[in-house]
Image (cartoon, rainbow over all chains, first blue to last red):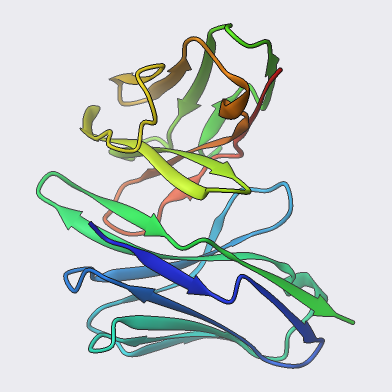
Length: 114
Length: 112
């Protein structure tokens, strides 16, 4: 089955700097890669996603890149702000005959220091 | 839309007791997922349903765990008997498409 590895497990950056989180996946058939943000005590919420037919996608200060050949994808946050502090999860979707499921990475704790 | 609704939000019980967690997916969504989140194991998929039918329950840890979805608007996750190592946050999520999953607020379970 699919396996998703995420690095780093923790990341501290100064406010205004960029943050990059990287994930690799194992199943070459996976075709959808979302990123979720989870604030302390809250539910995971989708912040950006990318499909396998696209190499890059941007939404204001966040962007995701996908390299299908290498089977890795990355989240880029520019001009970080204290409210970006949270746990970020990457995921890959495996399509099955009767449904689809997401396999999540272990998460990255991002701390933005002001 | 109220989003995915879970109850209770917090549950404290004693080892050996039965625990039932409830989930109401977003109206019109046809897939429902139960996840467990702990510091040690992260976010684990326990089971998911498509059109009320269990599709993959390979993540259910033991026979003590069971899940049902009697109709499109309701699902339960039951633990019987509960053990301290079951303490975790349990999330329910639903989706209408093959893409974004919407998570509920979670149930924080503490088994003493």
